[in-house]
Image 1 (cartoon, helix red, strand yellow):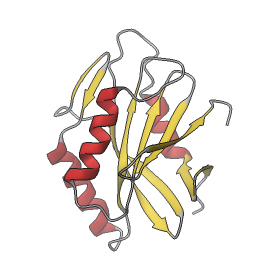
Image 2 (cartoon, one colour):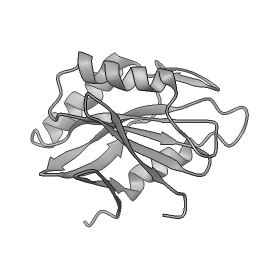
Image 3 (tube, helix red, strand yellow):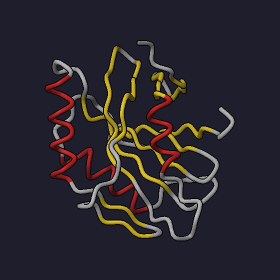
Image 4 (cartoon, one colour):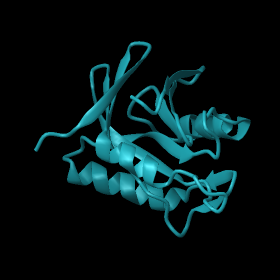
Length: 159
C-alpha cells in the first residue's frame, strides 16, 4: 500500500505529512464559533533528515479545550505513543504536537511556544527536535523546535 503525502522543507529537514494526517487536521477545523480548539500528538518515523508524519491523534474526552485553548491529556498521549512504538517494531515515535486555531493564518501564541518548549525540556526525545503544527481556517503552520528557536514553514491551503 502506497501512502499519499505532501512534502515541505524547513532548514535541513524534509517533512512529509500523510494525506490521512492532513485530513485529521481538516476534520477539526474551527469553522464555526461553536467549535473548540482541538489537537493531539504527531507520530511518525525519521530516516536521516526526512521526517515522516504518519499519524495524528484525535482529541479525547480527557483533553481540555475551549474556543481559544487546548490542553491534551499526557497520560492518554503516552499510551498512544507506547502502542504505536511497540506495534511498529520500535520505529514509530512521538514527533510533536498539533492543534487548531480560530484564525485564517495561524501562528503560535505565547502559550503555544511555552507548551512546545516544555514538551522539549520535560520529555525523553528520540530526536533533537519537536514538530508543532497549527491548523487555521485556511493555512497550516508547520514548525520545528530545536531547543533554541521555532523554525517555520507556512503551508498555504492550496498546497
